[in-house]
Length: 251
Image (cartoon, rainbow, N blue to C red; front, side):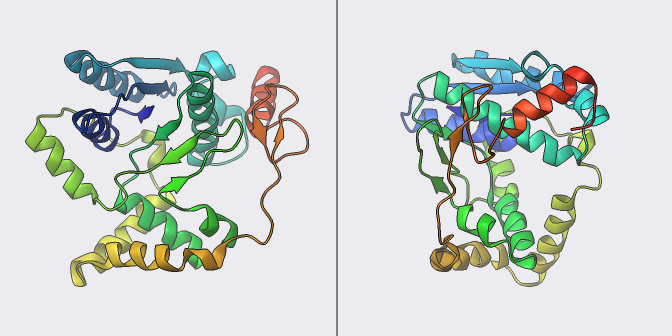
């Protein structure tokens, strides 16, 4: 199952997987971001229709009680963090309930290098231990893969141009001022001065990643509300957000 956003990375990944002979369906999360979600959905649906591929559309508002625009108004936290929580939960649930064995995302070299830089700057050992192109499945957690890890944004964009893949160019309006953009800017400056910096950074990390393995695995339990896995003792983060949305109270 491919997580599709209408952007260059996810659409390029979907096309590559199908060309390699994989039976790959797509899932698009309609995040409920005014203007942006409608456009990105159009690109996703047009791509699937032109190639005869199966695309499932899931409306976040229907699952959560509010889209991301509405969630931001009632929940504490930054937009990207809240959106990440919602996407991780729904993508895994759709994959698990659909009987898919693997969930593929379009994270590229620039994405992963930016995430790695932040985790190293803060020495987030738990996050460093979990940052890997292949995360094994366990119970109701579906195996996750990032096949584009070693391809830069420019390379993926070039592939889309050569392959005639049309995608949404606009950035999410909530991404303005996001930390990831600042980190990518820093890495781009280093890459311009020292070509190969991003790739070397990621490859070097993967060689020594074992040093960051947590001493004890995170204990997962079923959420008492939805039944999906969570590290929390009570309801999972998604269900807590859903409860707050229903009451219009901060999460």
